[in-house]
Image 1 (cartoon, chains in turn cyan, red):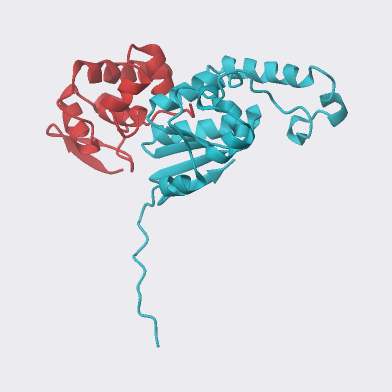
Image 2 (cartoon, rainbow over the protein chains, first blue to last red; image 1 turned 180 degrees about the vertical axis):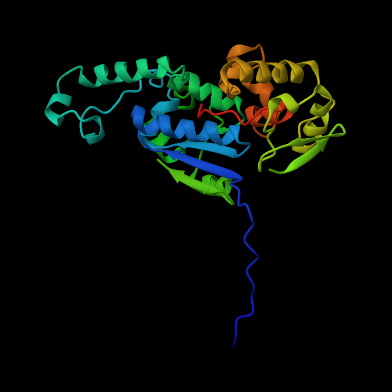
Length: 166
Length: 106
């Protein structure tokens, strides 16, 4: 039997209509790019949702989201020997430097960035499994958070769009 | 370059519809462009605050401001910008203001 099913023609100028960005890491370099992508998507008129899971939840944690640090160890891109990265204060120093650069360019810090992204209409969600795993409560997380959701709800929300994992 | 007729005048635009020459734009063209790109009309004073800012920043700096810049340089918040120009404020405000697409990631 021959298969006569025809695929619809690909659009001439394909566009992305929706992105779901998963943030799983709690370092500055793990969180910031995801925020740029979410904010950039909204500015292009693309629907965007951010999902914070595991250590990525620090980005939406009341006490921690203002103290996100650069990983000074196990981060070859930093070009600092691992042993030097282990010296107490190394991560704080690297973070200070990075924060200064961010400020110089007039880019927002993480806390301000998240608030801004919320204002663009993007959704902010935390992963239920991670919240349970870390023994957190809703009050531990920032007010801008739209909800704590299950993985099933995540896939429902992400349906029809692109999923990006960072 | 494609051309487009706005307010009875033919103007050059690029493939994305942005003006090639910002000087070719007149205020009378704004509503027509707004209707085309899905910006709610009639344009209000708040729209015009943003449109005027887009143009003055473009002529001063060579590129239009991003959403963050607009909200920092005016009293129009990010939230309001998304109400005024729903599908991408900086991009759409630039379209309506007759300037090229703003460059900038944040």
